[in-house]
Amino acid sequence: MTDSDRQQLVTEFYDRWAAPYAHLAHHAPYVRRFRRRAINRLELERGDIAVDMGCGPGVNLDQLAHAVGPDGHVIGIDIAPVMLERARRETPAAVSFVRGDATQPPLAHGIDGILATFVVTLFDDPGEVVYTWWEMLEPGGRLALVNLGPGRGPFGPLINPVLDIGLRLSTPTAEQFDDDLVTLLSERVTSAHGRLTELADHVVYDDMDGVLRLVVGTKGLDE
Ligand SMILES: C[S@@+](CC[C@H](N)C(=O)[O-])C[C@H]1O[C@@H](n2cnc3c(N)ncnc32)[C@H](O)[C@@H]1O
Image 1 (cartoon, rainbow, N blue to C red):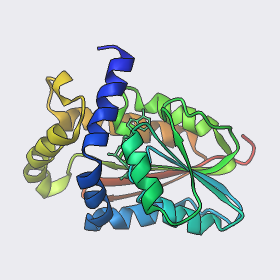
Image 2 (image 1 turned 90 degrees about the vertical axis):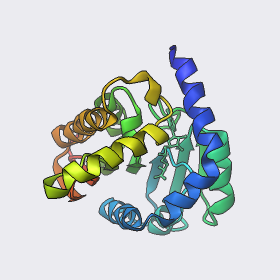
Image 3 (image 1 turned 120 degrees about the horizontal axis):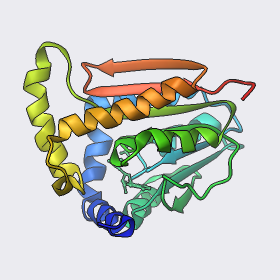
């Protein structure tokens, strides 16, 4: 499958499922808490520029806009036009929307905060994408990633088969992979979160039994 075939598959998949996905994204209880924590950890200030990579139906955008205030600027970028249209409709705050590929964002550098919730593990080389995003940050800027991951501890063996089914149903390219998708997810989370940990001056982690994971890295002031 070529890159452009894959992009088309991903776009069509998310556009088809935009309505039920939006409902899930707005209401999944623990997930809401992790979104809030991620945005708080970006420590955005009035007048800052923030980007939501793969913003989907726009669940994070209001809170980001509130954090940067009327003098700031929030940009939601997504590849799927129906998702983006839904985000535009459902976001009361002043936000700019860009249809584009978040692995090569068509945006200028000089960003204060980048957020990517349930996005980076969709990419073949998440560590490389993290590096691309990192390069777009101002010194002192922050990158926050929220992702699903394999369950740990006593509940892991119970949760992971259910997670595998969930991933099979919600991953547009699932049929390409013979391995179980929990293993693939684990590799991709390690790649993304590991790269951010290497790059950052300061890192904060948070997780819920491994299944929900947050990592926020701060760029050094001298970078
Ligand atoms: C699982 S959803 C997450 C949406 C949102 N971040 C959230 O937390 O609800 C993944 C989103 O990433 C978008 N996406 C997938 N590949 C992309 C790419 N290469 N560039 C931009 N957006 C992409 C999809 O269209 C979809 O809206």
